[in-house]
Structures are given as C-alpha cells and as structure tokens.
Amino acid sequence: MDEAARNRDQSAEELVRVSAEYEGSPGDIARGRELARRFLARVRAARNRPVPERAVDLVQLVVSELLTNACKYAPGPSLVDLELAEDRVEVTVWDTDPVLPVAETADPGRIGRHGLEIVMAVCQSFEVCREPVGKRMRAAVRLADDLGGTALGHAS
Image (tube, rainbow, N blue to C red; front, side):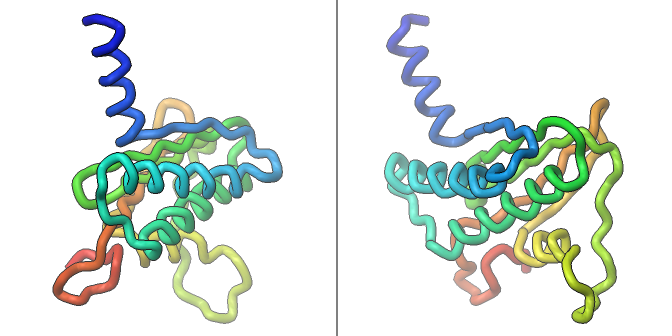
C-alpha cells in the first residue's frame, strides 16, 4: 500500500474512532468532554451526518460520568475510546480498578453517586467487563431521536 492510501485509510479511521489516555489529574473530565465534542464535530463535518446538539450533550455527559468514576476510584491511567457505529457512538472507558460498578437503588435523598444511574438512563446499552488489568465500561448513545417519539438514547 502506498503512503497516500495509508493516509486515506488513517483519515477514515480517525473520523470514526478517537482514543485518549488520562492520568487521573484535575481537568481530565473536561478534556474528555472536549474530546467527545470535537469527535462529533468531525463526524458532522466529514460525514455530513446529522448529530443533534442533544446527542452531543449526552455523549459528553456519558464520557464525563464514566471518566469521573475512573479518576475517582481507579489508581493509574484510564483510556477513553469513542467510535461511530451505525446510528450511535460507542463510548468505552477502561481503568485499572477491577471492581465492577453497580447502580444503586434510586434514592432522591442521596447526595452524589448517581453517575451510573444517569448513564444507564440515557444510553441505548451499557456493559461492564473485567479485563486482565482493571475493567472496561462501554455505553452506546444514539445520534438521533427515534421517529416514533421515544427519548434519545433509549431502546424501544
């Protein structure tokens, strides 16, 4: 494969996927949100694909919540992958803590610790898998509202 073909392939890959590593320092969550915003802006521009502002907000929220948990509970680095997959963005966060998160029972009186509940409420799917080092959390956020009127992110 020649250099021009490799560059085209790499450019296409960059349009549908982006990754970043974070060290758990102050500002990582904001940097993760910015990564999501820039990624979806590239998807809009390069693919001429509709990405509602609400979807951008939800992807940023999911990145923020999952990265917050990684920074708060896992020693060491964390990785964020964003990938365009058909009608959704797959948000994957890997961290070094092997303990799998569990959503708590809804409690409006509880202060904090609602992040996983929020992620599960706005995403089409959510899964957590133990890895040889730590865990991987993956959430899928739809890019457009259903024509049937269901909320963005929820599966029918």
